[in-house]
Length: 101
Image (cartoon, rainbow, N blue to C red; front, side, top):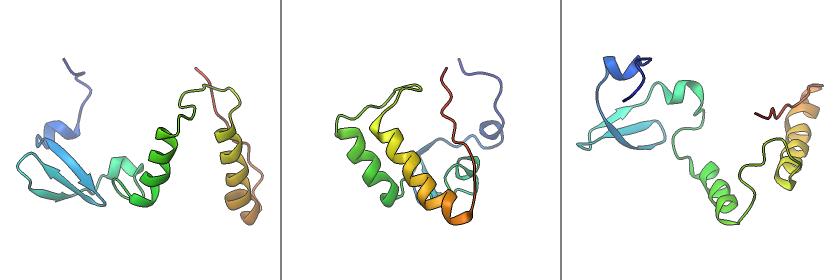
C-alpha cells in the first residue's frame, strides 16, 4: 500500500527498529552507521539527549503542539532566541516564515 516513489528501501531492504547518534539497528539487532542521517535533517544524530529532553519536556507540559500560523508563546520565544543567538551575532537581517496550510 506504499507509494511507488521510493528509492533507498529498494536498494536496502533491511527493516530498522531503533537509532541513537549515528547508529541504527535492524530487527535482528545488527548495527549500521547511518550515513543518510535523515537526508541531512539529523545534524546532531538520532535521539540526541540534548535535543530530546527539552522536546519531551515541552510535549508533556500541555503546551500547544499545532497552531498553524497563530501566535504562541513558544513561537515568540523561538523567534527571539533565533534572532539573538543566530541572526544578530552574524549581522544577518532575514525574515523567518511560518507558513500556514
